[in-house]
Image 1 (cartoon, rainbow, N blue to C red):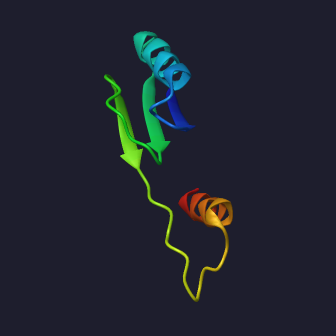
Image 2: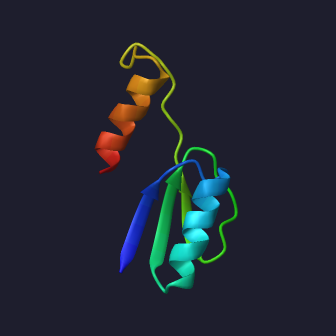
Length: 71
């Protein structure tokens, strides 16, 4: 089974969750804004686009748009 998490990879709870899922033999992929070393899981860092003339939203709005495009 494959699991994809959209989470802050630096959080202790996320690290524990990933460790538990990997120990059960699952393939874990973490998409995060703040990367960290998670043994057994692949980690992909994303960066939220900067505000500009085409993207005037606050950080949360830019993040939401980015994740919609990612999915």
